[in-house]
Length: 356
Image: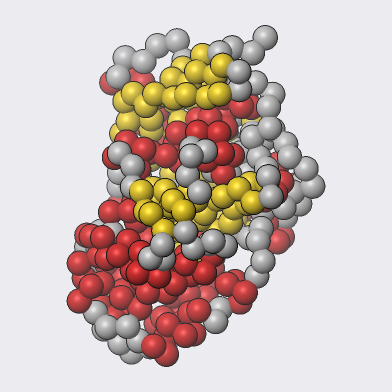
């Protein structure tokens, strides 16, 4: 029998490598209407050595990846267990965890999120719902984005829901279907250049603002094949490493100019991605703190009302929605939309592991 109340934790690690996001949530559902309350939330930063490992893993051998997966599962379990103990959380229905994406090659029928090994349930003594992308890829889908069903269920009042994280993605309703896709890299590139200046990120886009736009580089970025493709489509770090960074690095310009040019590129691609240039645009993710980026997006979309929510939702929306995906899986309900991923059908994705 389906319940009308769920006590869960959502766990997310994104491509921007900010750390592991954890959020404790109560969901209530009545007459197919969902409500949520975010309780405790925290981001646990990665150590320098873990950031290095996660960045390098795209080039690892199979044996190295298996060892990394084991080690990361142990790390993730320790972080989740500490969060539960610190906040004295009891009577959980499940911990719903995304893991961390290392390889994402849906065109080759392959995606790998580490930290989703079955032993994680025993390590934290909880039911765990995880590994949400793999089944979709096996069904011919992109395995991404997965957040749009959460946008539809939890944030139906907005015309567009957008996340500005390691990559930008958008979701919206069109002809009674949820449409969603990745738009472009964002913080995976901006943080790369901020790191070269000895910074974790470009705070509020202050450095980008001081640069100049290189028109030639901007035109070449906008001409990349990915932007000409129709949705459904998704991006992985491979695109940044193999295509975007080599292109930018071929230009001998200042880091400030690279940052500004890429910010302009992101803003333009976002504007081009929205079918209607009016209504409301709900923005979450770390990029929402980049004032310069938000200003440039607004300049390309003057008729759009940009809404940036409270800090808890802004920073933990993906963890919130992966918690919802886990609950939907427990209920045996659809949690991945084929209109978004291109899979053969809507389906209920994820593995459920029980503590032994």
